[in-house]
Length: 371
Image (cartoon, rainbow, N blue to C red; front, side, top):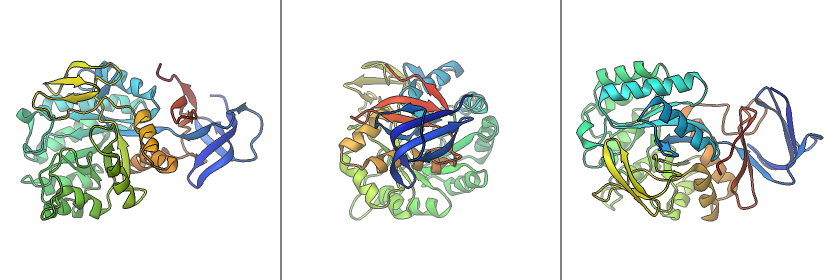
């Protein structure tokens, strides 16, 4: 792997944007500074860390739960939109099917293609199941969880749980003990029930507001419990799932709270039409994916669009980049991602003037951008 030097750039570092360049050696950042010379001029372009998407189900016509090949193809599709680190997210399904899908994700993780897997279910609320297939929802089951941990071969990073279910707190304890991030989501929990989950070690809110009991002035529910607990909160910034003011409200609680995700399904990059998610029919119209009952069913979002929309909606570019890279990397414990500093993996994006992704580098290698 050859060394690379990029100069005449504005580089977003952990300490802010500097005028200078970045050098890469053996797939990692060797130096960042104003005194680098030679190499390739970027003509003043802004360079930011590669995106880290910790919640994605498919893309480019590929459903990650359909086959090992589809899972790999969906990851490659999102890489072309600037996602240099992905978690494979799996919707509720029978335990045997989830174990098989987790084994595919483990193979990809062993090959360095993904950072691991996220189980969005099956221990979720029937009342707030959204597009999760209600036929396969279960009450928290430690034996089933142990089977899935084994199938993932050390690569299960996140599991979403509804904390009000019987046995949920015991399962959160088990997840924490296994080094798995427990997330609160698809839940009808009260404020107190959600708070108990965070006290037991849950450290993430799955797509805040969506799939959750809404805020009421006498029952603030899991949304305010998540914000009060100070945990990072996933947000689907597609202009459909959330109002832009919600992003600003999360940021007001702390710049490390906001996490941009796609929650993308196979329709992403394909267009309107009929699709299937978790065995249920999904209709995509004008970019919005819904079940027949009107429930939103994931998104057709990519991380480059989520990032650019955040900036257009008034989020500072440094905060938007943190939400799309640094914060999610911290959530799942990949400490060498989400920042441009010596020793970090050389995952970076060169942006155009309109904040769209012009070039993509992953582990020191230039990757193809989406057409």
